[in-house]
Length: 201
Image (cartoon, rainbow, N blue to C red; front, side, top):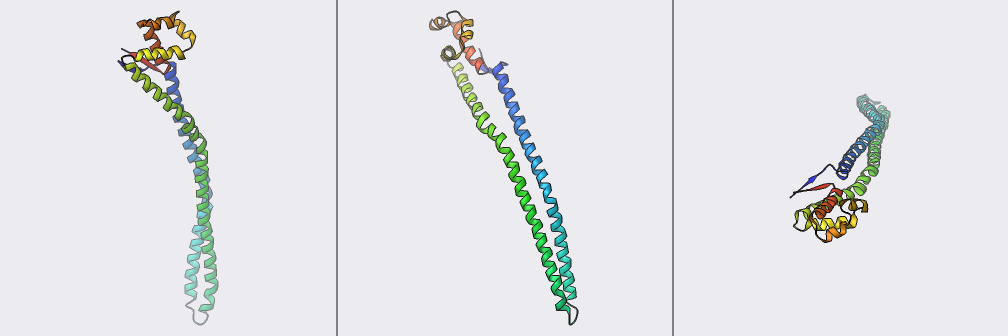
């Protein structure tokens, strides 16, 4: 006896939902990456400031070193160059700090926009999907057991709409109590169909 995924509405809805979840997660990740890259562009001025200030500091330090070799007044002339080089290094440090801040902001925003869509998947869709898988696995095991069809039929009697039950037989409960094979098989198939499965001999 085998269980096949059948093209019933439940199975199709499950498949469509799975595909939508995949697209939802992919779109959320792409949007988060786009937002991260967009915010990260704010770090460009900091990069330019760091590069320009670092180069200026090096040039001023080099010039101060050369001026310091001038006889008699060299020591006095190096002071302004050293102070200017220190100020340039401070500006370069500010540029690095700005880049780090922008990087942290970009990461925080990208994670923040992922919380809601991934939260819906993890706490909304995933528990329902796992529950469906457990129920389908249990139904598969029941259908493979010798008396499994009787249990599936009983579950159909207690859980299926009355309109579907009466389409199987006018006195479907009586037929089930008598052990009518056709009725029991029809009820078991109805319950499996509700899970998107089909009982095949």
